Length: 487
Figure (cartoon, rainbow, N blue to C red):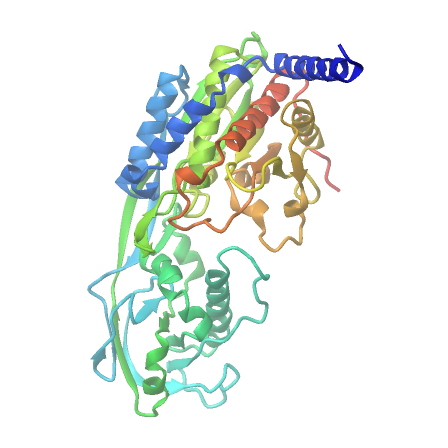
């Protein structure tokens, strides 16, 4: 055998040995199977699930499916009343389709010509006061109906930021509304500019869907009763006319829906430490059925967040087969897309003793983008709340998955504010060591193109292993990961 061939054999042997040694440190790794992840992903993100929108039967169907799969892989129920479920009320306010808006006695079609930006019960009639600019407020009478052009916000969203026009429009509406509300008008009418008009059916859909909350009295705290409307650009000339009149009757319907967290556990093997939990976190909901884009109206949410839902199921299965010293708690949160409501609720009303939750490993979108690269948030100040937990995650990656880990999205000044947009946040805010695994955003984010066939299954499998291996390290330490001291 030549020296070159001998060197290749030795390197191959060494590589196999190192992989074998790394995997032996994590005995459940072999249970994480790419084909099983694929089957579960393609079911949860299928058109049959209709996008799993919170507050709908579709979300509850997804929750029941998750619970059934948890039972099938051997996980035990850890929700309320001996079930896999923790139900909570989701309060929704939505403008009634029976509402009307007339400009010069011409009916404007709700959600096509005019959008109420936040649901407010109102009824008014009168002449429009057109403002040439936001500063044109010197001769405004109290209780006027104010109308003006929507202008770009003073601070534009960062170039390339996800959902850029959505953020542009909402920032502009909020900024101008806050200024005009100081004049105490009856109503505010904003005429969409060209930028907002380019995606008005997209972000207008969220206005049509209304507002969700878990505190039924939240609106009373703000006491905001001045309605704000966005009107199509084609009505600008009519509104500018000094004789323009508007009459509106807006009725707001209120609904209470059940949403659900799905909660399961895999008991640990240590007689004492099994009373403590490593919490694997994700969300099973997405955006549901919405405005069609290129003929597709189902927002499947394969990466966001079916990818993590099936990953933590696989991690739970591995824990069942090879229990850690501590127990694994698997929580699939509901209503994340409506405002992190499931994790906010569970963090306040956990189904296990809160002091027994020693770490939260959350994931959101772990199946796309460049091979070999991933991100870990909660890993650098000011978001890092446990250096020991971060070190365990990084060591697990070094030993097993070897991702090039991007921490730049964790920076305080990162324009996406990605750290604040997933289910680890309520736990971190209540002083539980928490980190957030992700492979970051992509152009299909919050569009119907987030389909299962676009997931990189090899990358999803490796990310699942990284989350599992980190949880295993946390489980096997005699000392729980400490919170960092704050000054």
